[in-house]
Length: 275
Image (cartoon, rainbow, N blue to C red; front, side, top):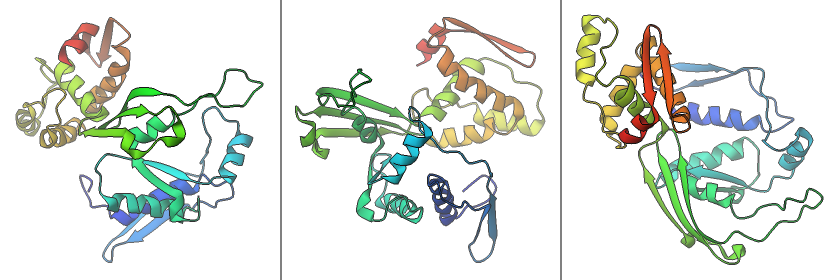
């Protein structure tokens, strides 16, 4: 459900089908999707400039790989219900990427990331042989928008013997969006007076001053906080700045941020101390 209207799940699924369909070179993508739940009709207008490719592959190789697609591997947050996995599989099948349900595999996101570490190509560009399987213990950390997925895996000596039992997975309800919020609350709005507001905004601010604890889910507080941050252009700028700061501050000792007539002199150690 969005802030202003309910969105039927079949609309979300159809949107995913349409997105996946763009992977097919001969696909005809609809200009719009129209769905109805019996009472209301929802229409999504689609852009006309879809492009599809893969990092590290030229277009010809990419198209050739898709034409020989034998399996689709999908990442899912740990412990998400089978109903979610079912709808993902159905979307892949409806998009025509593969023909059978056995060709669609859903695994934890951290495991999907770990599978890319199984092999590596030799550095010699004249050869295409694959080097020996990676061995030993590896911790995989996959940070998404709302969750952080972790998997500890001990790769066996022979990668062909790798099974699900080699993985130990855990999920935290804290991801990139929460990190952005914590940067806003702990670095940008901490002990700061906000721009002039209406009485309604002041009342809303008072109810939002109980910031979530840095590094903790605090889901109910964060849901309200996100709505509050999205409710004005100024606070949206703060969120955008936070997304940049989490990339800049780990590599820069100092950074000066300017938004309108406000300025922050931020230190790398500020970020380290807060988190």
